[in-house]
Length: 134
Length: 134
Length: 134
Length: 134
Image (cartoon, rainbow over all chains, first blue to last red; front, side, top):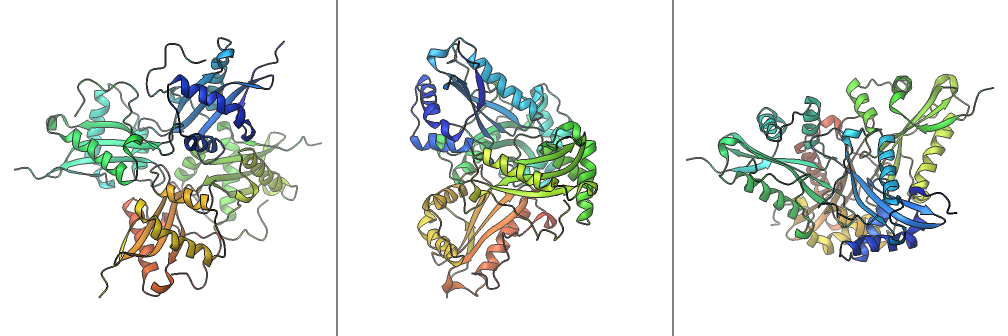
C-alpha cells in the first residue's frame, strides 16, 4: 500500500527530482527554457526576499507533482494577489488527485497568511488547457 | 490650438484630477472600490519600495488619461514582467491617441529600465474589452 | 508549573495582546508612533507580498515577547539580509530566556528558508542598548 | 576646462567603467567579492522589480564615482527607508565634491519619489570611515 501523499515546500536537495517535473511541464507547453532561467527560478524559491514559492507532492520518496505560486500587487486590492503560475503532475501519477492536493495546499497557505478568499486569485497568462497536466 | 500632450508620472498634487479618471475606469468595469483601496493604491505610486507606477496624460492643464503598471516575478524569466493593469481615457478625449501615447510611454520606460521586448508583457485578468475606454 | 514557551508567528487575533508589547518596546526607545504606522506595520505581517515578519513568545495563553524581522537586498550578497529590527520581552518575564528563544526562532526560520549563516545578519540602526529589553 | 559633472543612473554599457570603481570600493573595505555577486548586483540595477539603484558621476566621458542605494521596509514607518549602501569616488578625483554630488542626487530622487525628509535615512552597517573614499 502506498504511503500518504505529502505536500510540502521544496528543499534545496530536491533539485534532481524537481528538475524532471519542471522539464515535463515546459515540454507540455512546447517550450525549452534556458538553463540560467531554471537556475534563477530555483534559487528564488529559497530567497526569503522573493515572493516566489514552490510546493511538491511526495509519495514513497518520489516527487509526483509541483506547483509554483507568487504574490504580487494589484491596483484594486489592498492585499496581494496569489498567482498560481505552474502546476504539473508526473504522467504516471495523473488522475489520482495530486494536482488538486497541490492547489488546495496553496489555498491553505494563503489563508494561513491571512489572505481572504476574495483576494485569492488563480491566474493564467492564457486559458488553462482543457486537459491539465495533472 | 491645444498644446502638446504630455505623458508623465503622477505627482501627489494630481489626486483631485486623477480620482475622477480612476472612478470613470472602475465604472466602465461596473465596480465600486472602497475608498481605502483607492487610498492605498494611490500611496503606492509614491512608495519607492513598491513596483507599482502610474502615468497620466496631460494637455492644457487637464488630465485626459491614466495608465497603471507594475512589475512582478515570473517563473519563466530572469527579469520581471511588466503588467499594464489599468488604462483609461476621459470620454471627451477618446479617439485622439491618448491611450496609445500612454501605452508607448510605459514601453519606453520599461526599455530604459533595461527590459527587453521579449520580457515586456501586457497582461489582462480577462480579455480587453472590444472597445477599450481610450 | 508553567507550560512550555511557544514561539510562533503572530495571528490576526493576537492584536490586543501584541499591541501592549509593541507599545512597551517603543516606550523603551522613548518614542510614540502614530496609530496609522502601527496599523500599517501590523497589516504587513499578514501581507504575503511583504517580507516583514513577526513572531511572538507565548506561555499559558499570555504573550511574553515579540520579535520583528524583515528581508532586504544588499549589494554585496546574492541572497537577502535578514534584518532583525525589533525585540522586546514583557518586563515581568525578563531574564528567563524569552529574548534568546525569539532570536533563535528567527535564525531557525531563516535557515529553513535556505539562508546560510554567512548571509544572516542581525542589524541595528544604532547600537543595541547595553541592557536589552528582554 | 573640464565639462560639467553629470550624475545619472548607470546604463548597461557602463559596466567596463563601473567595475573598476566597484573594485576600488571593495578594496577600500579590504574585501573581495565573488564575480557572481558583482554580476547579480549589476543585473539588479536594471531589474525594474528590484528596489536597488545605482548612480554614477561622469565628467568628460570618464566615470569618477558611484553611489548604490536601495529601498526597504521598516516597522516604524509607513514609507520605505532609503538605504544608501555604497559610495565611492575614484582616487584621482577626490576632494572635488563628487561624493557630495552623488549623495545629493540620491536625496533629490527620493524626494521626487515623494519620500519626505523624515523618511530618508542614510544607513551604514558600521560607522562611516573617518576619511570617506570620496
